[in-house]
Image (cartoon, rainbow, N blue to C red; front, side, top):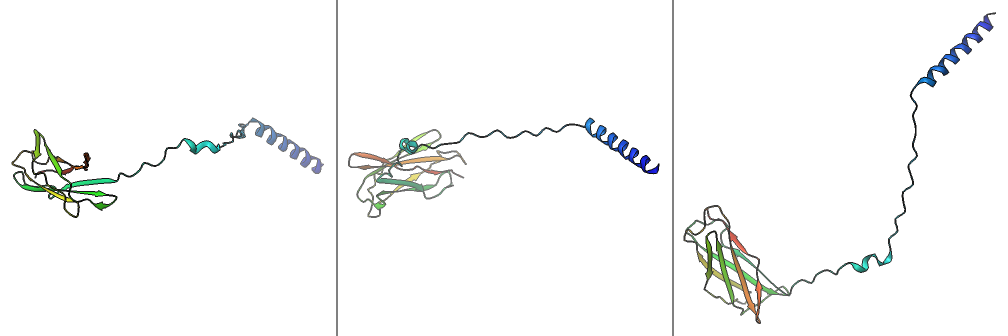
Length: 156
């Protein structure tokens, strides 16, 4: 009789466990959808533009002081190169751009054997303190104007 009682109790317990587990939340597993295959055509790079050519003439300019006094005299330097070699004998011109107007530097220097020119600029208080001013320098080369990167400074 004890054996039957244990079998009945075990069956009843299993029935209760199955019933309880069926009442719990259901978890649904979603399978990922297959991704489309990417194909790269051989003509992909035909429309890519070529790398631009580096210009044969390059020049840059800079000031002797980045933060001069408002009444200082500073030098503006520039250098002209052709295919990384200095270009001598080329005339240069420069214009300083102050907050309230421009000043042409009428010195017209000619580049030396290193490709360098120097302009002298008297600030005369024309630029407010701590406000940047720029100087555009360009060279005349065989009838063409080669513009340099601008020089800049900000008076103290």
